[in-house]
Image (cartoon, rainbow, N blue to C red; front, side, top):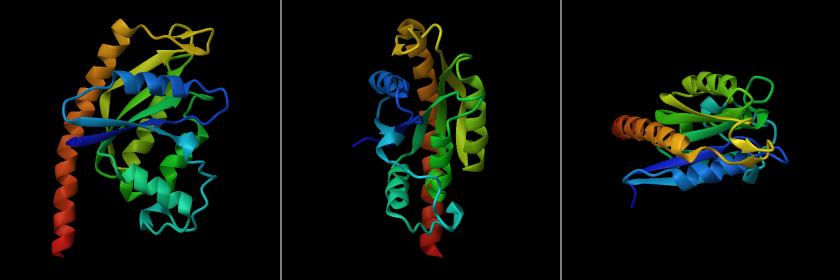
Length: 196
């Protein structure tokens, strides 16, 4: 059994998206001893626009789709967040997915993987702002892909593996280190809550 579990979240649900190709590449190239990586496609969860009456911080979810999403988010010790850049930011589907649940995200680690005309850097920075509010520690390494150089005809993902795989592995090393440290924080909080 793996010591850590890292979710690879595909943040776009748009028809014709290329994020699923990026996700498949990340899954194929993600490796770390004692770590299980799982691909999580937001498209499979069909989350509507946020429809919970209470803020996520209450942890009182009324809808089955929210409970299903919360259970999946809660399984992981960390995340690799894949985001395109739409109009200088992340897609609404990814922001919506962040907003649905609360404590399930807390005290975990994440790395941002972005793509777009400028490597998706602006979307990645906005993702980092949201991660901070969700108490997710985002690592320094940011893997970026350009639609001009890493995609053929803007649609087929063909990154320069000799450059991008080492970048991904460096990011994963940071995510794993922080995820391991934050796991002990969550365990201490759980023990404290049980003793109260």
